[in-house]
Length: 42
Image (cartoon, rainbow, N blue to C red; front, side, top):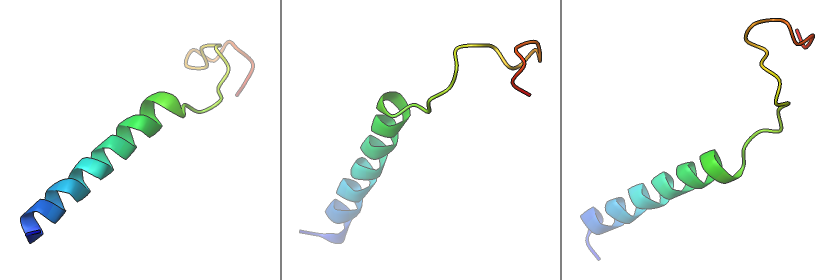
């Protein structure tokens, strides 16, 4: 296996890990909108 193939698989693994974490392991946040400051969570 050449170094280019190893780097390509490594990049693919990192990208897949990032996407899985982003979409399936979301942080536990309340559904309230805290951006406006009227939810009492500040």
